Image 1 (spheres, rainbow, N blue to C red):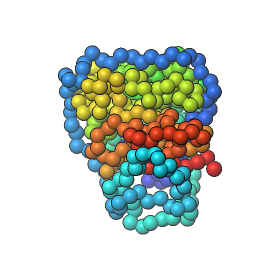
Image 2 (image 1 turned 90 degrees about the vertical axis):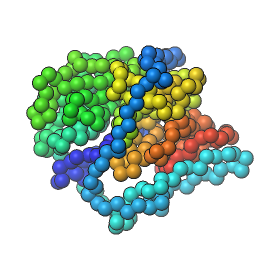
Image 3 (image 1 turned 180 degrees about the vertical axis):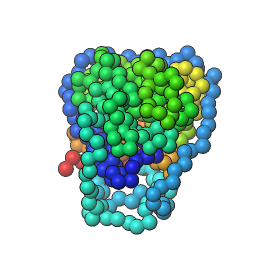
Length: 391
């Protein structure tokens, strides 16, 4: 998520909630790994607007005033006790080195993670399975909490409002542990156009990415209420199993919408999606949602013109990118991907660099061959910035 506007007193608790939400990825990725409902995967066709006719809009990166003064460093700082020991790379294997960010901000005072203590404070109660937290960037300091069942709740001045921003529980299927309303992103110009985007699984278990608009007569200063009937579906992606639905949404500094999709579920990429460019599963997608409905393809998407890969795809080789975030100071993209049985990983895309990266799944689980007892060819793969095992 981009800048997170939070009340001063409970800010630490809310950040801790974010850590919990990201941590859920490791657990959720293992649930239901043996189950599947259908061996067939199909995705909705690309919109009729072709890449050659797409109109793109370039926006400057969003700016924010951090609460601490950043000190640039050449690489991210990781406390030794948190550093995973990578397995040796066979001499016969060719690996693409993990990219290193050029200017990752750190605080002026270096704090050891061993000395860090967290305090959990209750901010609101009465929520039903909250799985996401966002803000609208409109200066109101409201927080919006995504409930898995299909509601978006509003926290204003530390109080949970009775009326939700949106209730689409009538069309959301949330029976599976990794199903439901999973993602929320407000348009960068939400204060002017009243638009936001959600990612959910429908009653058939398939992924839907849709745009909603505020109700008629909406005033940004009044209690927010969206129109449930304003849904404009962007994508419908058939899911062969109940798990690995991805679900996160985020606008990048370039103004485009990024969508994370899982590999279709079960285990071991059973349906062969993560390395298959003909499907939208197991990938990071990038759409222009401003110039034509439902969307157009940014002209600089990496696979435009490649008949073997869908134009919407920004990166492939992902298992279940449940959460990811753009660094609000540098624009770098960090992707948390759920591992199989042994390792979790964080992938990295430096700001300003072209897409088209292959993050390796299921050839690799983190920086290790998958399955672990097999040799594998790492040629052309981008290894993770960070990994950790389940111990």
